[in-house]
Every structure is written in C-alpha cells, then in structure tokens.
Length: 357
Image (tube, rainbow, N blue to C red; front, top):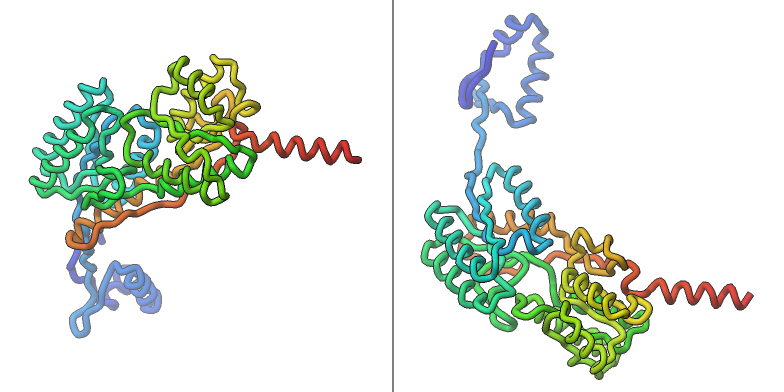
C-alpha cells in the first residue's frame, strides 16, 4: 500500500478488509492501536486521517567554556549536554580555548563573537577563572551577549562573588554546602586544625566553599581556625613548607580535586605522609581522584546530569524569557577514600577490640 503522509485520509474499514484479506475485527483492532499511539485520528462524519505531529523547534547552542580541556568537570558536563541535545534534535557548537592565559582571554572573546555571528539560540557559559583579567573578560562577554539578545545559562559558577548575583540562570551544585560537607567529615574524624587551600583568581565557587568550611567549624563549636585559609601556589615547596610550620594543620580541605592532587605531590616531596600526618579532602570527584597514590576523599559532582539539566534550563528560558532568574542546584555525594584517614580510626578500633579480647 505504501505510506500515507501527515493529514492524508486512510481508506475506509471496508477497503482495508478487502485489501488485506482479513476480518473487520482485525482491522478495527489495528486502527484502535494506531489511534492509541497517536498516529492516526478519527474525525466524526469524515473518516480516519494520519495525525499531524507537532514538532518542537530545534536550536543551535554555543558552548563557551574557557579551558574546556583543562577543567576536568566540564568534559562529562558537555557529554550530558550533547546527549540531551541529540535527544531533542538540537545542535551544540564547540570551541577550543585551552591555550595560555593571555591567549585564552583573547580566544574566549573571539569565540563569543563567532557565536553571535552565527545567531545561535543560546550560550552555555562557564565564566573565565584563574587569570588576572577574568572579571573584565567575563563582563565583556555578558555585555556582548545581552546586546545580541542571546539567552545565557551559566555553568558551575556565577559571574560575581557573593552576595552580588547576575541575572542569568545558573546550573551547578550548592558550593557552600559542598565546603561544609567535606570539612565536617574531616572534623568528625579527628581533625582539629584543618586549613582550606585554593588557587589564586579562582571562581566565586571557592568563596562559597570557604564559607562552608567556616560553617562546619561553627557547627561543632570550634571557633578557632576559621581563618586558616590559604590562597596560593600549592606546588611551591617553600610556600607549603612555611604553611606547615606556621599553622601546623592536621588536614587540608582543598578547593577542588586538582588542588588536592598538586598538594599531595608537594607533601610527598616534603616527606609528609597522607593521611598519617595530614589528611586531605577535595571537591569534584574527577576521573583520576581514585587513581592518586593515596585515593582522594571528595564530593562527587553529578556532571552528566548537570549537562542535561542545563539544556532543559535553556529550553525553559527560551520558552519563558520573563520568568525569574533561577539557581538550579543538584545534590552531591561524599565519596570516602583513604586520603581522609577515616580508615585509620576504623583500624584502631578493630585493633582495640582485638586487644581487649
């Protein structure tokens, strides 16, 4: 019989019985099933027609993620976005900004201009960090996208430090809670002098994690140590040696996993053992966190789900441009490994019980 186009009328039941040499009951059942699947529709007094399918509009979105290949969480986030985009028939444009800091700032601007020239439907933007000109470049990008009337979804971080808030939707995690959870875990397992460490010119997410670090101290009644905050190069031997001598930390809460990995390497060079002498936790749970010399206790970010959520948020924003600005924060899970030293207490308790026998 061939195929029938959308809106085309089907033969009558009697014609279908004749053409397929089958019973009327079989034809009625087949038509009922097609109607149940919303493939056909019956019009009283007119007949049966192939149903017209309402197709949602497809879009082309730009990914503006400076240092995409350098920041480990964004690869799985982009994978989630790509999957959600394919499912919805949408396309994603990618760009490379993984060069040196000066080049990265220039390339980020150029990529933004390219997306504007392509009249993309929206931009997923992870504001630039770890460069001295990050604030200037981020503001330039936002001003350009606003002028072009292109919707923006922020990934992972806001443009501005707390309490200032941009007017764009943000998809990420609750970074203050993240700092609280990993710090509380160290404190609950015997640490009393943890320090918070992070790289200079980091994103506002680090400020929120520092706030969570302080919250955890206050939660258990520790007022001392709230200012054990170090923002600097954890790969510099003399700097870390001085840090150990001046504040004598028994643990480190690292702003992210890459900082934790770099600090572990420096401590190894200084003959400081993890976790026997100092305990370490991170945030992100990047793919190498479990493969470090001492596997890293960290907070797992649901990166693919963050990407899928970002696409859904963008489609909502396009459909409802005047709805209030939102922070869409996904929950995280603490992943306990050996770097936090929790196994040491467990082994000691098992030894004590064995000795008591």
